Length: 206
Image (tube, rainbow, N blue to C red; front, side):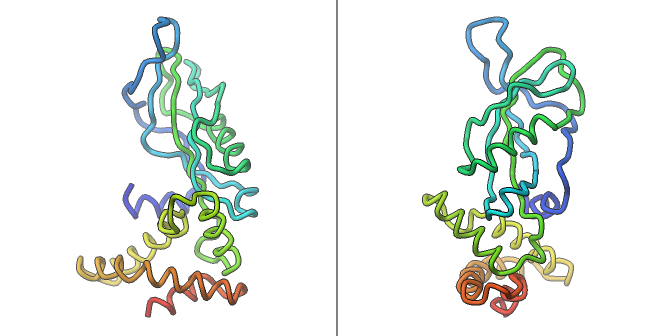
């Protein structure tokens, strides 16, 4: 997913399915009556109020049955977001989702649900650090560069540089300087929780 898509997804509410369903990626087994399984490549974007309040962001993978009426049923989490809030809201997001067209036969669909912070551009430092530190604790095998807020903010800064007439070299320079600035921002925000996250980041990027 491009940075532009990441940013656009962050600013939109949940969107229904649109366009054709993806081709089958696997069969459900030897039973002929079992629905086939397809994988939706583009994630659903959602906002979890409970997760947001706790600083939980990320993604969960859900599998559900898509009926010929275009409705999802029997949704289950097949890859946890490592948060009971995110997992529960991921199932609800899928059950509430719509499709662009109804399938000719029932099928199992596997899709990811990505949870975005609701106030990424205005959040305070305490909210920012809570998200990053929770993610690091929940996903010790990953780094802060995998957090939703990191990817969203990098995309936002990239768009700002492009709108200002930056060339490709300027964009590459941004990618190199953003990571250490983000890390310094995290340290400052832990010391000054009432400051604005983006205010601190922009000062660290100068």
